[in-house]
Amino acid sequence: LPRPRGDYVYYTRSFEGKSYTVHCRAPRDATGQWDKTAQSPVLEGEQVVLDVNKLAEGKKYCSTGAIKTSPSHKLLAYSVDFTGDETCQFWVKDLESGETIDHDEKLDIYGSLVWGHDDSVLFYVTMDEAHRPHKVYKRIIGSDQPDELLFEEKDEMYWIHIFKSLDGKYFHIDSSSKETSEVHFLELGNPDAKLECVAKRRQKVLYEVEHRDGTWWIASNVGGTPNMSLLTAPAVANCEEQWKNLQSSDGTKLFDGGYQRSLSDVTTFKTHVVCSGREGGIPRVWIVALDGADVKSMEILKFDEEAHDVGLTSHFEFDTDKIVVAYDSMITPLSHIEINLDDTTSRTVLKEKAVPGYDKSLFACERTTVKARDGEEVPVSIVYRKDVMANRNGEPVPTHLYGYGSYGACMEASFSATRLTLLSRGMVYVIAHIRGGGEMGRQW
Image (cartoon, rainbow, N blue to C red; front, top):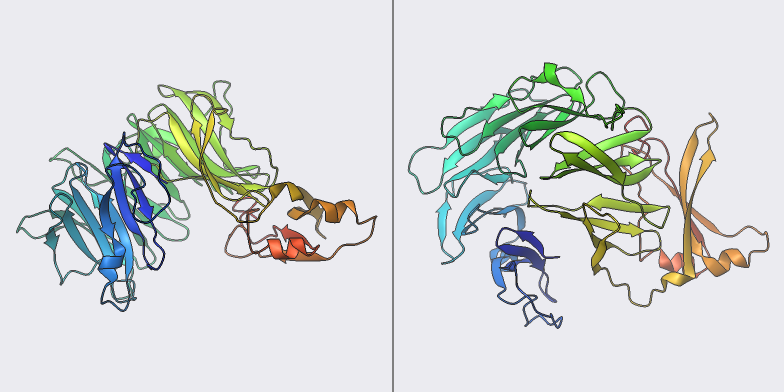
């Protein structure tokens, strides 16, 4: 699915008989009707950015980690594991000449790579003997000077994750255990900037940070809430005393960390903030419209089918008025839908997964709850052929009941082509979203 990023749209292709993907791009304004053959480009002006099949030639194993174009789109940084032990090396490639301009065959890294403010700086992570990502380095591309150790996590309970804010203003280092986290930030584009901490780690306090317009947008369980609250604070260091719950104009907390609504992800855009989470056991996406720093409204994306799965896809542009979500249900194959942030009823299906021979009109799905022995209502998703239920005449029907509850993993009401063989033979397929999963929030 081509997605815009600067002057280009980026996408991947796969070819019959080849084991790996091919990463491509085309000019943002490119047009063309792809004839679905391997020889023709998907869009006019298509350029191969990275052909993983060529990387894998002569190798017993090949798995790519990060694949990141530079801010100018002239360079490509990518990491690859050729051994299978989850240890990578990285290369920097000139996309105009195709030549490798930076590579150290003695440098083993974790898979993550993040560009700095421009094409001259690249951040990467190394691992300790236990394969725990624990050090973050800053590398000057094309320079002979030693890479700068920016951060080291010495506590063996914590792993490091690096990322850049969508607006490109900050580089972040997230150091987290299962129960506690701490985020540092570096202002990009400021040569005098030093690495600082958003909020010092506090036992059993988890938090994640995004940036927008001089404000940290924070998802955290601070205060011992069962789920994540949505808070804001000035984008300064050591701001934990300034965290405030985000409220609507009538003073209602949008995400209070309670049992009814869980928050899993926050994505900040220029005029909106998009929140992902769960409510009623179903994945949800909320659009928060902003007027400066004030909340104008919050709207949940609604779909026709009660039992479904939906999630925000990856986005690479801060200043946009459209988002793309991935949607499917127990009877609807996966589709990618573009939604206007100012008018969520304005939707365009960009891509639908083809399922040969499938007729959606023959099937139906529904959502209900079943009371457990302790009185708790457990969500249940059901899918079946319509004629099977219409002709049962009050008699029991063969049922396949599936349930898995562990590690907070959610068993979504999503589409499965392999399930169709059971349904076509007259079976009803049921998913019980039992406790141990995360369907009803972290407490579930």
